[in-house]
Length: 350
Figure 1 (cartoon, rainbow, N blue to C red):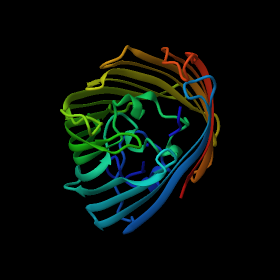
Figure 2 (figure 1 turned 180 degrees about the vertical axis):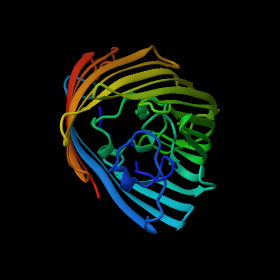
Figure 3 (figure 1 turned 45 degrees about the vertical axis):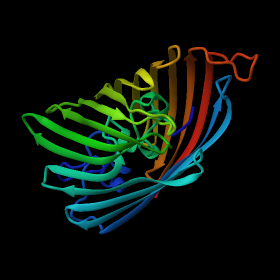
């Protein structure tokens, strides 16, 4: 297990609007673009450091993890912004470009993004690495790069249209076309995918409902392999405020050249005080690799987020895991299919 998302607004706008305000007014729904008072250039930084302890797990042991990111937003014109984000991860041991795109408000309700940006899929993919916006130290399986269902970023074009009314509620419709996709902490892979997301908030309701999907073809991850394979996926998401809890559930399924995958989770978050929030999550994944037997994993986790300031905080998380048997490593030993884990992390935003 490794440890690895938005702004108050005067009008509806893009999911990638100012991360500065994102850390002050947290929301997993639609995000807004810059207001008229926004500065010409905004610079921000965020990241986290965590210590994870897996007990009797595949590759178990202590693991120090960190990621840091620097974000710059240049408001070229009131309707055009340039975004650049650089990030560094412990596993990569190098700095890479995560965002590099132009954001153009074609109208008050329509925005185009061109370049490399996060894939609009599910509820939290655009802010998957912003720990300040999550109460859990870990990401749900749905957004884990090892599952290959929801990519981290794409290279291509995204079009977003927003509508909001008292009678029909809030609606955000996005469509995109890719020339390449990027998974967690990996290189770009050529891909010709068409996808989209529809997100609806009913009028006078605490519900948010969303459906995301894509389909197309993708090159093999290994450069030595030849031939493109078909790839498609569907994610259905919902969240609601009920009985003092913020409840979130997502289910995803897909197929690629690597095989088939079904994954889902249910998470509840509850504020205990102005600075402390409890979270609980149950999740499961089922995979059928193309050339191997079926694999599965279930996990129950709970934790506490301490947020004394919008600029820094701490997280602690405990998890109980069950998984299908794995190949012995090293030879003549058998790894347990049940294990516990514990993680502690510190996060910051500047």
